[in-house]
Amino acid sequence: MIKITTIEQYVVGKCANPKKYQLEDVFISEFHVNSKRDIAQFLIDSYSLGELTSIKHTSSKHILEFTTQLFDQSIQLRANIIYDV
Image (tube, rainbow, N blue to C red):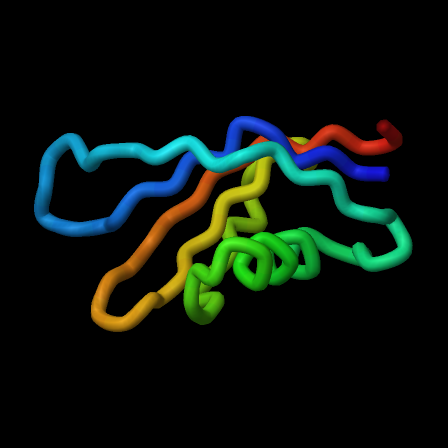
């Protein structure tokens, strides 16, 4: 199992300090995950976050950062990944 924790969501815009929203932790079976893109798509589908725009691949193995497009808003998410739970 993989546990996704500390999921922070905020809308990307012109605001200097955007309001962050904390989402519930999620467990994912390793059977469904081959990459960070799969984890991001799982979170998008779970929380109805729109369409995946980009994933930051330069972050550490245990950090997931990606951007989605929902209607006319860009939403950025950041989460911690705990493998082998």
